[in-house]
Length: 142
Length: 151
Image 1 (cartoon, rainbow over the protein chains, first blue to last red):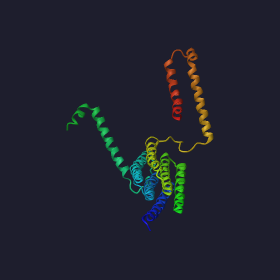
Image 2 (image 1 turned 45 degrees about the horizontal axis):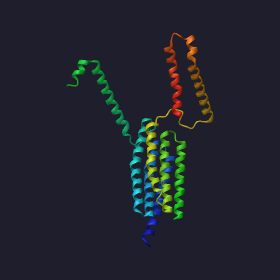
Image 3 (image 1 turned 60 degrees about the vertical axis):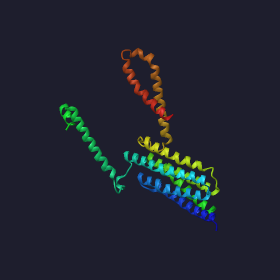
Image 4 (image 1 turned 120 degrees about the vertical axis):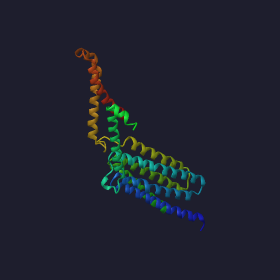
């Protein structure tokens, strides 16, 4: 049993695992209840499945130039899918498509409210300083 | 090997179909974006599967391009099209499109009548051209805006 046969068998196993993970991502995208859960299905199992399929392809091809290109694909995927997921999650949160009852922990809403409060207070101080010039002149110096 | 490739092809085809189902159902634009992302990645997997089966290397650059292009699409939609007007979340029926088209044509006719008016309008409204302009301006904006967006 030469090493090429072993490589083919390992490639077949990886292909199966990768295709199964891609299928799981498809099922998750259809069945999960809200945007963030679907995004989870689209980013994590999907990328791992793709990486497994590409490893299998590299094991089948066994040429270094092809492996270089495949590493490039994996790097692009690992760099771009978090960015895309972040943008989608941010846009979803801001347009109110996140269901708070499904979240185990919601740090962003509390932080956002605190930041809004601080901004309101800063605005109020600025307005008071603008309406009352002597006090506004003194306040920054203190 | 052929059995493995067939099983993988079936799984990937099912994943792509499910992604398309979500893209059709998706209550919001962002869900559709995610679904199209999944579809693109499945496409990459399918091309890789074919290359692994026939041991060819010419299709690998396609994988590089696809993994970059899918990202650009989803980020663009998330950045610029996440806020969508109410009522545009589903595909319109034929009657709705016909009604909108009739409305648009009527608006265009109005605009054309107004554009032809000045010679006649000068007779019965000679005293206040500024007000006539102000009344015409929003009308022009309202009709040309969607027109540009559509084309």
